[in-house]
Length: 393
Image (cartoon, rainbow, N blue to C red; front, side, top):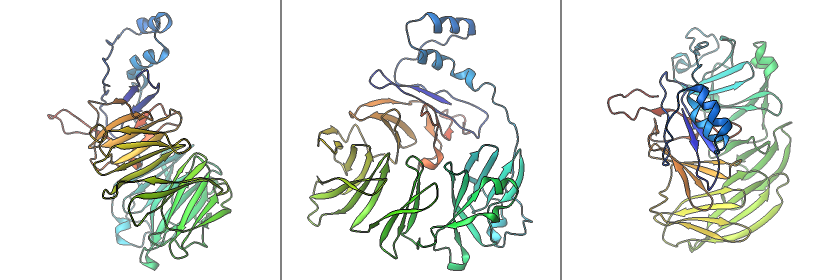
């Protein structure tokens, strides 16, 4: 478990932890760690009398926060005799790749594509509603208390994504078949996709067959508006807005970017961002009014899309990360690279990094990173940094 204290430049705290191991490590930040006080009475005294704020007490007490963690129950998704599993690979034991919890219901998805629902430690249903359904992803829709499954099927050689929503009340009764299909008008064959935006309460689909993007309301799944695939290469979503990234101009000198209102698709701002002609674009990311653009071997540019102000961060200080997570509440962003985690602000300053915190997987995926709703803790799967011990922590 890791609790992070930021510098005075930007105040925030984040915790990283694992749910799979019995051991625990506390990662340090670059600042000097205060001497730990073990006497709990002295800790309360310091909290009331010292001049530092309550975050200091919270940091010193972080070990007690998780000292009472105990195993409550174990669930098993594997059932080789399940009658509704027609495909042989669905009947084999497979590792868990995704866990979604809502109230008393816990969903576990395996790598092979089997999803099971548990209540109070008992399996109540498999979410695979047909013998050849392979579930690829889960999303819990808080707007209407339902689980959305994204699946592929053998009948079309697993080439199309199919979405289905099932209210929790039916899952509690062991009736997953009572759900209904979503976005049936859309052909979601590769490179088509579906993206769920929990922050704005929207769903974005792309139909390559029809060359169009559709935005749907997550509450009732009504189509709100369409966007033609007018030379769009990527769409980024953040609170209230969408960023449309168009194909690079044939000259290679710029890329056209557009900001749209997520509610109605109205154009808010359009501009051309200049590029180095001979360098490939590593990434373009959006965070509210800030745009992060980096080309191969070039500095990171943090651009204010409304004022055109640019902050440059040298390439030696900001190597291209494998993944990002934006902390909207704290106006910060996380970068993941070579099993390391760093925290940055939008002035181009590294707020902190964890010098003894090493992620377990080198090819970091944000699917393995969980952030609490208050954005003060991060949970991830880590490994022991001690070379004498190879066990994950």
